[in-house]
Image 1 (cartoon, rainbow, N blue to C red):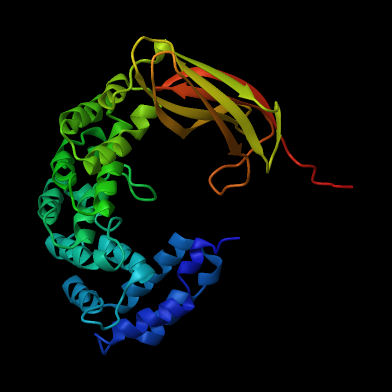
Image 2 (image 1 turned 30 degrees about the vertical axis):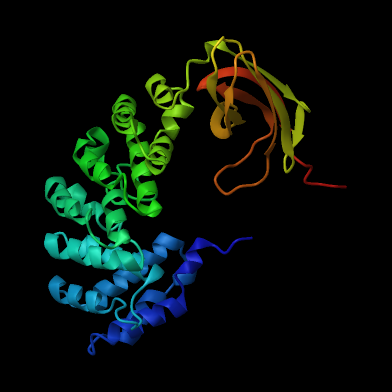
Length: 371
C-alpha cells in the first residue's frame, strides 16, 4: 500500500521547520512551536495537520505580519543554505493566506519567492478572491519571470477550478481576465508551464465550451507541434463530449460516415480482473478521415444509477472504406478515486465524440467467505 499523504507532514519535518525558522529569528520559540505543531498530529489527515502547524506559526511568529513575513522569507533556501522547503511550505501558504490580506503586495511577493521551493498556487487564491483586479495586475507581471515556477504560478494559481483548492467563482463566471495570461504563456519554453496553461483552459471549458473552442481555433493555425499538443490537451473535455468546433479544430469530422462494431469477450467480469473487448471501426465515406476513438465505462453507483467515465483509446487515419480492429482490456481493480458496486455496467464506444456502439456487462464481486 502507498504511504498515506498525511505522513508527508510528520514530527521530524516539524523539528526541521523549527530549526530553520530559529536560524533567522533567534527569539523564535522552537520548543513551543514543536509542542503546538505535534500535539495530536498523528490522528489528523493531511490538511488538518497543515492547519495545526499553521496555528503553531500563528502562536510563535510575530503578530506584526511584515515582521513575520521577513522571517519566513529569510528562512527560504538560499546560496546552498538549507531552509523551508517542500511540504514545510504548505502551512506557510495557509499562514500567509490568513494573515496577509491587509498587506497585499508584500504577501504576493512572499508567495512568489516561496513558489520555487514548493508551490504557492493555493496561497495566492484568497488574494484573487478578495480583490481580483488588483491581484491579477500583480500576477500578470510574473509571465516574463526567468523562474519557470513563478511563470507556472501565474497560470496554475489562477485556474478557476484548481483541484483541492478554493474555487474562484468570479473567474468561473467570466474567465476573460486570465486569457491574456494563458495566451502569453502558451509558447513557454517549459512543458511544465505549458501543461498548466492547458489545464487552465480545460477548467474553463467545463463552463464555457464555445469560448474555449473558439480560443483554440484562433491559436491553432500555424501552431508549432508543442502548441498543438497543448491545445489538444486543453480540448480534452470538449473532445470527449463531441463538441463540434473542438472536433473540427483537430480535423475530426462528424461520425455519420464511420461505422463501429463492439464485441465483449465475456459478459461477466470478476472485480480485480479486466473487461476484454474488441472494436472495429470502418470509414464508409469516399474521403480519408481522422478518427478519434474513446470509450466510456458507465459504472454502477450506490443508488443503482450509472455514471460514465471516458477513457482515451486511439487516434487513427482511415482511408476510404478502410477498417481498423482494436483490442483492449480495461482493468476493473481497486483504485482510490472510485468505489465499485456489483451489477450491470455498460461500455460505450465514442467515435469522434459520438456514441457509436455499446454493450452491457455484469460486474461481480469475489465472495468475502471463501469457505
